Length: 464
Image 1 (tube, rainbow, N blue to C red):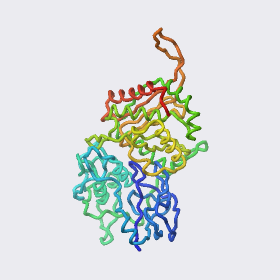
Image 2: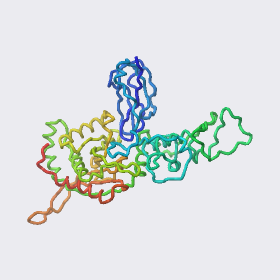
Image 3: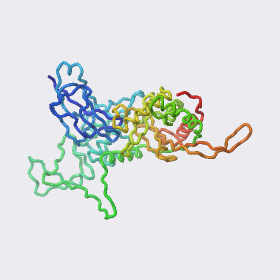
Image 4: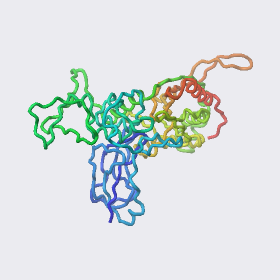
């Protein structure tokens, strides 16, 4: 028999941790390969985690409600040695190693090796420096302020702070303004000084032991805010806290600019009205506008490939694959963004079936981790809420996102060979938010205009 550790899988792009919601198996239970063992929640998806090996659940390492980093062991499965030797893969690191290759599918987060003592002290502040989502997540967990993070020397490419840098900083006592004001407890082997020195702001080295808090000193908790009888106090759940933090991070990382275009989509509305009943009868599912929007966006990305990029420090990573994420509203009111991979290689029927499949599984909490990975551009249909336009926030590490508004009938001037006429047409606003670090107004504006052009030029004879 052999013991195989079950690891916390990666649940999607930029997801560094998950919360164990419920164990579906208990110690001693037999497990088949690919059988669901537990339910895990992230800020993007609640999903069941299957076993990679058949065997018996020997030990549960993480209890329900605990937050676990991607790649950390969560359980031990006892399986036969032959099967384990043939199929047990090495535990995957949460992110790939650093690489400057433009073909990398994700922004690389882990750095090259370095001396952990090289960054034990804070240096000169470097405001505006790029930080990977992994580094930001660790900083939040360890209570490291942005001011301290900006002063932390980095050993990665172009001085970037790596995971090893911030972990060495934490191990070295993470000196900060907050730490400077706290009195460290004396070591167990030392006698307390008669006149204890004040808390020194001088940082420790990476090799020095971190100060341990006094066992008798209680940790002060932040009191809940006071409200009157006419108010209700609701604490954010973990998912809402994480969503809030990611939105703030995106606005801090990317200088957002939004361009707007109004498109005449009358031909699309008429075409859908003509085919939706037959499509519903044939396929058993609805024919929506979303596949048409995605098709137009994919074509526009082919015309303007510099929209399909991400940023790593001073480098632009140009993506070959066109993977379009589609925001889906969940019954809870939260949004989730499953990804249509290689959207440019699908026709309208293929896109329609893919959109319906992802939307249905998202609302039923049946998405798989791979359904959320690798997005290079995102589309959000705010029109489904009756909104005519919006200013969406970019999903990091992407550099652009488009919102499509509600389709409204409007009087419009129609140009004909016999002269101009007034008629009723269907119009829709497109809102394009983009990262002004790499997408200038000309590129951002031309891109959304090209998407509108493809929608207005829709062929009413298109087959589905």
